[in-house]
Image (cartoon, rainbow, N blue to C red; front, side, top):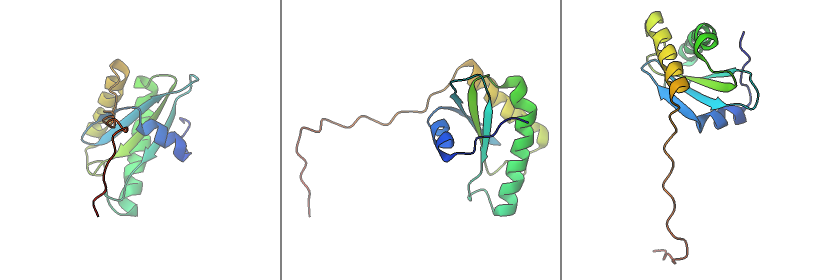
Length: 129
């Protein structure tokens, strides 16, 4: 069993790291200080009710158990985020989604786009009331 991410701060740190989106899942990968691999799972209310969300997370947990030991990089935290298709996606297609995302993240990490820099703050701005 792969160790789990449980603290919100770990999930937030992973959300700012490299990620890959596939039809059945979004995978985020953040490098760690040590060589351990940890994994977390999340599913928003947009996906469905509690029964559907729990089913999605169960499917993602099993997919992670099968794919992360083979294709995950040592020293990384992974967060698997369920999408609307996670619950109804064919099992092999879901495994392929996780595998493809892990391979892509290992080959060439994709950084999230950074927010535009704020303009020079030395200029005064007027508030219209």
